[in-house]
Image 1 (cartoon, rainbow, N blue to C red):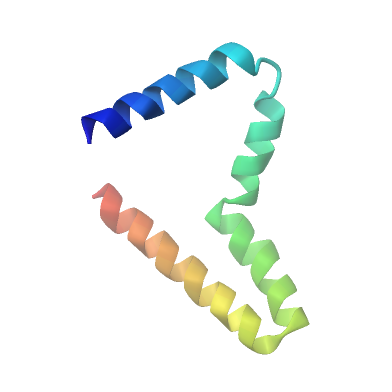
Image 2 (cartoon, rainbow, N blue to C red):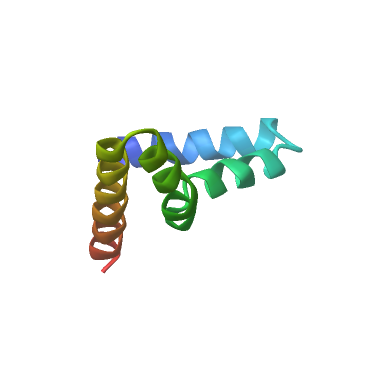
Length: 73
């Protein structure tokens, strides 16, 4: 587990050193994965395309948000 943590820290340090000026891009990527964006954009789009797909997206978003909160406790 410590080795995995070290690798993550090394990757973060590398990205910070070599990818200057990409902050706006990464903020945009983070926004796309935000649970609020999922409920407001992905769910209605998926529901409009196919009813069952929309319901699945809604359930997955709800469960993933719930798990996120539980694991943060």
